[in-house]
Image (cartoon, rainbow, N blue to C red; front, side):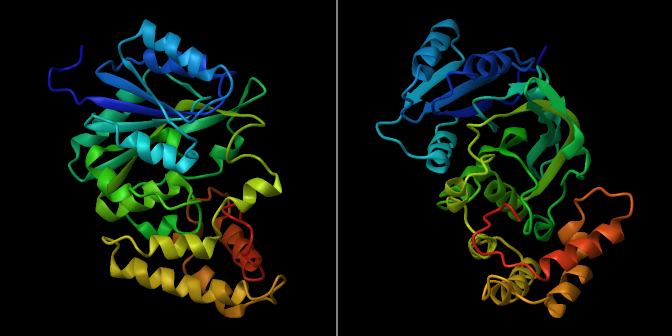
Length: 313
């Protein structure tokens, strides 16, 4: 039984043409062991049966609160609007096509007993063609703490794993156009407090052809900001500390050189910078021989142009 002063959680889901998997995900959320919650769903003008399915769920559960946009906002702006509707002390983000384990919310809540924790995240396992694939996630360490520099080169936190304090919303919005919304939230969180990590696999993250950020098509990649554009937006966060600002400015100097050519020559200075900062930049990679992996990655990026690659570097 939950205590009478248990935090109220807003689970926020954005939907668009998700009829194939929406029922399974909504059911997994409504079956959470933590029931002091609301499920806010904002539909972005779906043209399939998603909205009709959601209306049926609203009739079945008072926890479900539906909103439908008058016109299509797009993924980021829809999430930005949705999180501002949340009434909860804590906000958990949900994709429309995953499956949550029943204890997901309950396992994340205790992280917020620490007043310095503004965001907590679990782990997720890929669900593809009906099978769970732990390989990719086994190759990465989970981020925790507040060293923003460790998040600048790679997006290391998925939105569907995250829960954060409602007080963080004022610092999150507006979410920049074409920014990976979960990357933005994670970086902002490190500037205003700590991120806590729960090592449990609490989400089955479904991979399929319609995923927004898993399409390999050129059109989807054009929607993403390049790394230098992303860093310049991170650099505008008011509460970012001076050490991180310096790190960003050093990275941008090198990226400007790398991006001046489609096939830049090997940049010795960039290689030395990457190797010197290897624990910050590549420390999330779980490898048997970390130094070998760090050297190989530093060599690779020291001769890479980052133009037109989005977050897929």
